[in-house]
Image 1 (cartoon, rainbow, N blue to C red):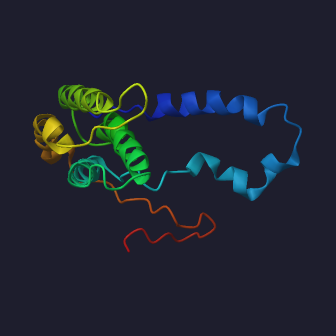
Image 2: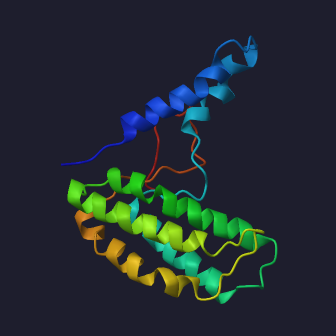
Image 3: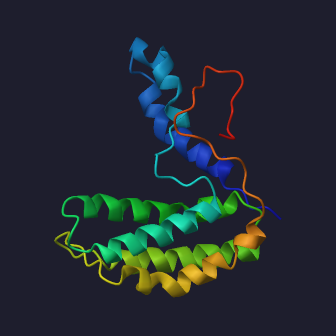
Length: 171
C-alpha cells in the first residue's frame, strides 16, 4: 500500500494561497512567473527518500566537523538540515514504503528532528559538535528502509524550464 499525502498537501497549499490569489486585483498574478509558484522546490530539497538520507548524513557530518568554524553559514546549513529531516515523511510517502514502514520512517524522522532541535539554544546559539553521532541510531533505522522504498522516481531539476515540451530529466 502506497501512502500518499499529496492530495492533502495540495489542499493545504491551495488553502494557504487562496487569500493571495483572490481579491488582490493585481494583474501580476496572471503573468507567467506566478504560474510557477506552485512548482517552486527549494534547491536543497532532495529528490527522494534515499537522497534525503544521504544529504542528512553528509550535512550532519559536515556540521560536526566544522562546528564553530563556519560562522554565519552554520545557522543556514543547520536550517537546511532541519528542512530535509522535516521532508522525510513526505519523501517516504512518495516512495513504495507500506504503512508500517512509513510509520517507522516518520517516527525516526521525528526523533532526529527533536534531537537536532535540542542543538539550538533559546538564544539561537548552535551546539554542533558530534551532531552526526547524536542522530546515527535513527539514521540507521531510516537507511534500513531504503530498499523497501523502491526505485526512486526521476529527480526534478530545479533549473528546468516549464516552457519546454520535452523535459530531459536524465542529465
